[in-house]
Length: 145
Ligand SMILES: [Zn+2]
Image (cartoon, rainbow, N blue to C red):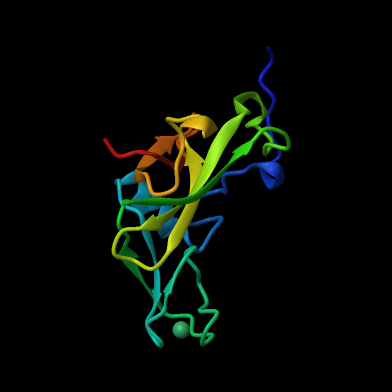
């Protein structure tokens, strides 16, 4: 089957370098195995997803902080129809919202190692970093074993 080049505007993963995004540090850190986000240097709010401007106080000075890479499954569902372009061939697949350990924040991602029927709220999950064919990185959840 021929491989279809996706227009970048329809691509689920963003362009990750400094030329394209001001949050390129997130992807640089992810490549090093770190899940990070921004913390507002003015009001101290920890923001997810990473931001360049604080939605609470409008300050634009941020520092990067590491986030835990483990947590508990809070909610999940299955994508059967309407998967993002480039992922249609993977459906059905599950996505889950994981409450991070020791951090009042939840992170949504695909769940890589289980079918919907095998998932239960409260299961222990950990982050899995994936590298795409073109070198970009993204993340998913897998069960903590
Ligand atoms: Zn702020």
